[in-house]
Image 1 (spheres, one colour):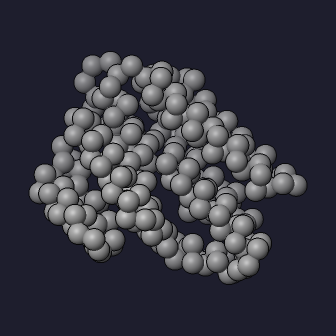
Image 2 (cartoon, rainbow, N blue to C red):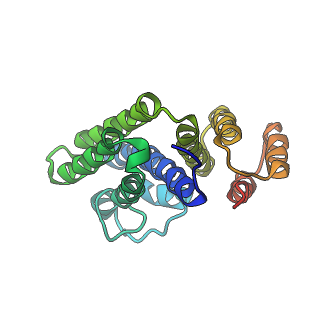
Length: 222
């Protein structure tokens, strides 16, 4: 494919980020929905606080109705899917039509889930097709740099969300090591001193999650 321009690298990076955002936030949404049904109707507010979005929903029912499906909500899952698709369609010649098609299938799934009598069960198909997208990235894209940039975006988003959602230290460290590996193979410029600082922070048994997130925002250099 030749040299990947900064503009194309940006599309690939954000394709990775948005698909991972859909995957991880949807998994946590499903857990939160179970909590709201079983024991804590207001647990959605904690979810919103952790991922840093305003609680504009007002009730658990509004949250279940709007957070996955509202195309006018900039934080919704379907909005992230649309953003992933926008980046995929620009890079169709680089990632392949079949790879891109799984994002379209995931979008169809979430629209179908909105109309389903078993909304939570129907949303599982979105996760399945996002996983199929990642399988296609691994299997169908021959260019190693393209794969690594997409996976870097995925890894960066996963790490950011794990830090926000208070995943276990082991989960966070594993996500960081995976992301760091893709970063070093991506061909993108990054600030080695920031990487060194994060390495030292994560070597401690306790560390400030917000500070790590702030450092990550400045890691990749334009």
